[in-house]
Length: 166
Ligand code: HEM
Ligand SMILES: *[C@@H]1O[C@H](CO)[C@@H](O)[C@H](O)[C@H]1NC(C)=O
Image (cartoon, rainbow, N blue to C red):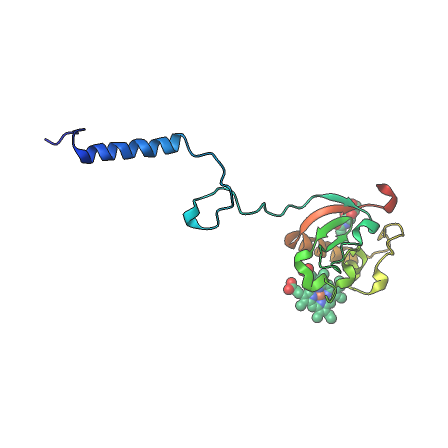
C-alpha cells in the first residue's frame, strides 16, 4: 500500500514546493515595483499604468465655460439647460472645424431647442443666462431629446450658473 514517505526525494521536493507556494499566498510580496511593469515577464500588477482620467463636477458660469471651446486643442464643454457636458470626445462635431463648433464653450440650449447652430442662438457670455421662457412645447421637447442624447453619450461635468453667482 503506497504511503507518504518524507524520505523520498520527490515527496520532499513537493512538500517544499507546497510550503513555498503557501507562504507566497500568506505573505505576498508587498513592495511596489520601482518602475511600471510593461511586459508580462515583469510580473503582474494590480495597478493600471496610469490613473484613469477623472472628471471633476464643477460649477461654471458663461464666462468660465467659454475657454472650453477646444480652440487650443483642449477640453470642449457645452451646456444645455444648465447642465454642462464634456463633449471633448465629439471634437469632430464641436472642434474649431466642426459643424457645431458654435456650441463649444457655450450655453447651447436655445440652438438645441430650435435646431439651429446660428450665432444668434447664443447668449453673449457677459449677459444673464437665457431663461428660455419663450420656447414652444415642441422646442422644449426637442431640447429634452438632445439632453437625453448627450446624457447617454457624454459625461456630465458640471452645472451652469449666472456669472455673478460664484
Ligand atoms: C444641414 C443639416 C444637418 C445635417 C446634414 C446634419 C448631420 C448630422 C450628422 C451626420 C450627425 C452625426 C450623427 C451621429 O453620428 O450620431 C449629426 C449630429 C448632430 N447634429 Fe446635425 N445635421 C444637420 C443639422 C443640424 C442642426 C441644425 C443642428 C442644431 C442643433 C444639429 C445638431 C446636431 C447635434 C447636436 C448632433 C450630435 C453631435 C454629438 O453627438 O455630439 N444638426 N448631425
Ligand atoms: C430645464 O431646467 C429647468 C430648471 O432646472 C427644469 O425645471 C426643466 O424641467 C428643464 N427642462 C428640460 C427640458 O429638461
